[in-house]
Image (cartoon, rainbow, N blue to C red; front, side, top):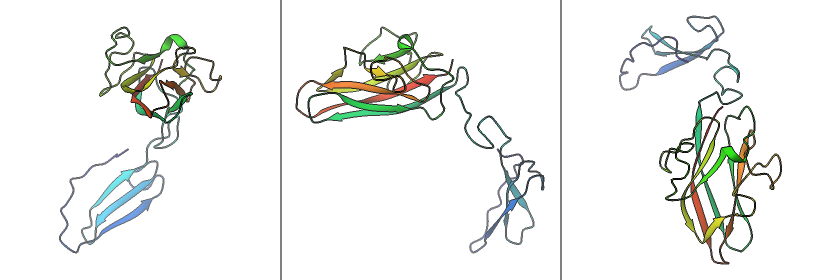
Length: 190
Protein backbone atom coordinates (compact mmCIF):
# COMPACT_ATOMS: atom_id res chain seq x y z
CA UNK A 1 0.00 0.00 0.00
CA UNK A 2 1.51 3.37 -0.98
CA UNK A 3 0.99 5.89 1.80
CA UNK A 4 2.80 8.84 0.23
CA UNK A 5 3.06 9.57 -3.45
CA UNK A 6 5.36 12.17 -4.94
CA UNK A 7 5.71 12.88 -8.65
CA UNK A 8 8.58 10.92 -10.16
CA UNK A 9 11.60 12.91 -11.31
CA UNK A 10 13.08 11.86 -14.63
CA UNK A 11 16.68 10.86 -13.97
CA UNK A 12 19.47 11.82 -16.27
CA UNK A 13 21.41 9.14 -18.12
CA UNK A 14 23.87 7.55 -15.74
CA UNK A 15 21.98 8.55 -12.55
CA UNK A 16 21.34 5.79 -10.05
CA UNK A 17 18.33 5.12 -7.85
CA UNK A 18 19.16 4.25 -4.27
CA UNK A 19 16.76 1.94 -2.43
CA UNK A 20 16.75 1.52 1.33
CA UNK A 21 14.65 -0.65 3.61
CA UNK A 22 12.61 1.39 6.10
CA UNK A 23 11.93 -0.06 9.57
CA UNK A 24 8.46 -0.07 11.14
CA UNK A 25 7.61 3.44 12.29
CA UNK A 26 10.49 5.07 10.38
CA UNK A 27 9.48 7.93 8.11
CA UNK A 28 5.88 7.85 6.86
CA UNK A 29 5.75 4.01 6.81
CA UNK A 30 3.98 2.81 9.95
CA UNK A 31 4.40 -0.87 8.92
CA UNK A 32 7.86 -0.41 7.37
CA UNK A 33 8.68 -0.48 3.67
CA UNK A 34 11.29 0.97 1.31
CA UNK A 35 12.48 4.42 0.29
CA UNK A 36 13.82 5.35 -3.14
CA UNK A 37 15.98 8.35 -4.07
CA UNK A 38 17.66 9.46 -7.26
CA UNK A 39 21.26 9.63 -6.08
CA UNK A 40 22.12 13.13 -4.90
CA UNK A 41 18.59 14.54 -5.26
CA UNK A 42 17.74 14.55 -1.56
CA UNK A 43 14.12 13.64 -2.42
CA UNK A 44 12.79 10.28 -1.19
CA UNK A 45 9.75 8.41 -2.43
CA UNK A 46 8.29 5.69 -0.22
CA UNK A 47 6.60 2.33 -0.84
CA UNK A 48 5.03 1.26 2.45
CA UNK A 49 4.09 -2.24 3.53
CA UNK A 50 0.36 -2.83 3.88
CA UNK A 51 -1.53 -2.77 7.13
CA UNK A 52 -1.87 -6.15 8.80
CA UNK A 53 -4.94 -7.90 7.40
CA UNK A 54 -6.52 -11.32 7.76
CA UNK A 55 -3.93 -12.76 5.37
CA UNK A 56 -0.97 -10.78 6.73
CA UNK A 57 0.67 -7.53 5.69
CA UNK A 58 0.33 -7.11 1.95
CA UNK A 59 -0.96 -10.68 1.57
CA UNK A 60 -4.21 -12.18 0.38
CA UNK A 61 -7.18 -12.52 2.72
CA UNK A 62 -7.71 -15.96 4.24
CA UNK A 63 -11.20 -16.32 2.72
CA UNK A 64 -13.00 -14.79 -0.25
CA UNK A 65 -15.22 -11.95 0.97
CA UNK A 66 -18.96 -11.83 0.43
CA UNK A 67 -19.64 -10.66 -3.13
CA UNK A 68 -15.94 -10.80 -4.13
CA UNK A 69 -15.13 -12.81 -7.26
CA UNK A 70 -12.04 -14.64 -8.42
CA UNK A 71 -11.61 -16.13 -11.89
CA UNK A 72 -9.35 -18.50 -13.79
CA UNK A 73 -8.94 -20.79 -16.77
CA UNK A 74 -9.06 -24.57 -17.17
CA UNK A 75 -8.30 -27.15 -19.86
CA UNK A 76 -8.52 -30.91 -20.34
CA UNK A 77 -6.73 -32.94 -23.01
CA UNK A 78 -6.97 -36.70 -23.43
CA UNK A 79 -5.56 -39.28 -25.82
CA UNK A 80 -7.57 -42.28 -24.65
CA UNK A 81 -11.00 -43.38 -23.51
CA UNK A 82 -11.77 -43.10 -19.82
CA UNK A 83 -12.13 -40.09 -17.56
CA UNK A 84 -10.20 -36.87 -18.14
CA UNK A 85 -9.66 -34.36 -15.34
CA UNK A 86 -8.75 -30.72 -14.80
CA UNK A 87 -8.42 -28.99 -11.45
CA UNK A 88 -9.59 -25.54 -10.42
CA UNK A 89 -7.66 -24.04 -7.50
CA UNK A 90 -9.00 -21.00 -5.71
CA UNK A 91 -6.23 -18.55 -4.85
CA UNK A 92 -8.33 -17.32 -1.93
CA UNK A 93 -10.33 -20.11 -0.34
CA UNK A 94 -14.08 -20.00 0.22
CA UNK A 95 -15.65 -19.71 3.68
CA UNK A 96 -17.56 -22.97 3.06
CA UNK A 97 -17.80 -25.69 0.43
CA UNK A 98 -20.42 -25.29 -2.31
CA UNK A 99 -23.11 -27.92 -2.82
CA UNK A 100 -24.24 -29.33 -6.16
CA UNK A 101 -26.93 -26.65 -6.63
CA UNK A 102 -24.32 -23.87 -6.45
CA UNK A 103 -21.86 -25.33 -8.96
CA UNK A 104 -22.86 -24.86 -12.58
CA UNK A 105 -21.25 -26.17 -15.76
CA UNK A 106 -22.13 -23.71 -18.56
CA UNK A 107 -21.88 -25.39 -21.97
CA UNK A 108 -21.51 -23.35 -25.18
CA UNK A 109 -24.78 -21.64 -26.16
CA UNK A 110 -26.54 -22.53 -22.88
CA UNK A 111 -28.90 -19.90 -21.43
CA UNK A 112 -30.48 -22.00 -18.67
CA UNK A 113 -28.47 -20.48 -15.79
CA UNK A 114 -28.16 -16.82 -16.77
CA UNK A 115 -29.16 -15.50 -13.32
CA UNK A 116 -26.51 -17.60 -11.52
CA UNK A 117 -23.88 -17.40 -14.29
CA UNK A 118 -24.46 -14.12 -16.18
CA UNK A 119 -20.98 -14.05 -17.74
CA UNK A 120 -19.40 -15.49 -20.84
CA UNK A 121 -16.13 -17.34 -21.44
CA UNK A 122 -14.31 -14.08 -22.20
CA UNK A 123 -15.64 -12.43 -19.02
CA UNK A 124 -16.59 -15.12 -16.49
CA UNK A 125 -18.81 -14.06 -13.60
CA UNK A 126 -20.85 -15.82 -10.93
CA UNK A 127 -23.69 -14.77 -8.64
CA UNK A 128 -22.97 -14.63 -4.89
CA UNK A 129 -22.29 -18.13 -3.56
CA UNK A 130 -21.84 -19.79 -6.97
CA UNK A 131 -19.04 -21.39 -8.99
CA UNK A 132 -19.66 -21.07 -12.74
CA UNK A 133 -17.49 -23.12 -15.11
CA UNK A 134 -17.73 -21.80 -18.67
CA UNK A 135 -16.87 -24.02 -21.65
CA UNK A 136 -15.27 -22.40 -24.69
CA UNK A 137 -14.92 -25.61 -26.70
CA UNK A 138 -15.63 -29.33 -26.57
CA UNK A 139 -13.69 -31.35 -29.15
CA UNK A 140 -14.40 -35.08 -28.88
CA UNK A 141 -15.21 -34.54 -25.18
CA UNK A 142 -18.41 -34.44 -23.11
CA UNK A 143 -19.37 -33.89 -19.46
CA UNK A 144 -19.47 -36.89 -17.15
CA UNK A 145 -23.24 -37.32 -17.04
CA UNK A 146 -23.24 -40.05 -14.40
CA UNK A 147 -21.91 -37.98 -11.49
CA UNK A 148 -21.85 -34.46 -12.88
CA UNK A 149 -18.84 -32.75 -14.40
CA UNK A 150 -17.66 -30.86 -11.27
CA UNK A 151 -16.58 -32.66 -8.11
CA UNK A 152 -15.44 -31.56 -4.66
CA UNK A 153 -12.01 -33.21 -4.33
CA UNK A 154 -12.06 -32.85 -0.52
CA UNK A 155 -15.20 -35.04 -0.33
CA UNK A 156 -14.36 -37.53 -3.10
CA UNK A 157 -15.08 -37.78 -6.80
CA UNK A 158 -18.62 -38.97 -6.13
CA UNK A 159 -19.61 -35.59 -4.62
CA UNK A 160 -20.84 -32.97 -7.09
CA UNK A 161 -19.88 -29.52 -5.80
CA UNK A 162 -16.76 -27.52 -4.90
CA UNK A 163 -14.52 -27.54 -1.85
CA UNK A 164 -13.23 -24.47 -0.06
CA UNK A 165 -9.95 -24.61 -2.02
CA UNK A 166 -11.19 -25.66 -5.46
CA UNK A 167 -12.95 -28.23 -7.60
CA UNK A 168 -12.26 -30.96 -10.12
CA UNK A 169 -13.69 -30.94 -13.65
CA UNK A 170 -14.47 -34.49 -14.72
CA UNK A 171 -15.10 -35.09 -18.42
CA UNK A 172 -15.06 -38.12 -20.69
CA UNK A 173 -13.66 -38.43 -24.20
CA UNK A 174 -16.15 -39.57 -26.84
CA UNK A 175 -13.60 -41.87 -28.51
CA UNK A 176 -9.94 -42.89 -28.43
CA UNK A 177 -9.13 -39.93 -30.69
CA UNK A 178 -7.37 -36.90 -29.15
CA UNK A 179 -9.95 -34.94 -27.17
CA UNK A 180 -9.88 -31.37 -25.83
CA UNK A 181 -12.07 -29.09 -23.74
CA UNK A 182 -11.26 -25.71 -22.22
CA UNK A 183 -12.79 -22.57 -20.81
CA UNK A 184 -12.85 -20.23 -17.80
CA UNK A 185 -14.43 -20.13 -14.36
CA UNK A 186 -15.63 -17.64 -11.76
CA UNK A 187 -16.51 -18.08 -8.09
CA UNK A 188 -18.11 -15.43 -5.87
CA UNK A 189 -17.99 -15.47 -2.09
CA UNK A 190 -21.23 -15.90 -0.15
